[in-house]
Image (cartoon, rainbow, N blue to C red; front, side):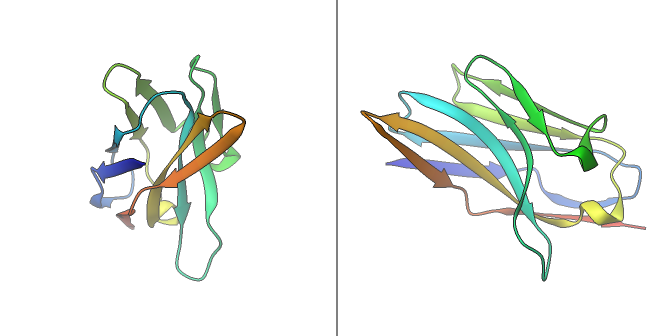
Length: 119
């Protein structure tokens, strides 16, 4: 099992910045992709950014140039630096982790952290 603990959410004015962190514990061997998803009220959960074990990144078009994802493989922690925040970035942000167990890919989710951007 893997436990994910997110932190760093909060209330910020438009144009401000926040940094989210997600620390993984438990069975953290063979972690592949780690990423962030978000879900706004009444909307489906959507990908924000992911990063592979080798450091390759993938971003949603809506956050490119404003958000940066990074990971510390030693600490089993992923970060999301969010700059130039907009009210439409308001959502619950969820950490997501994929771990390989033999031929099976296991997926884990954090409990979510609220990000609210005021106009």
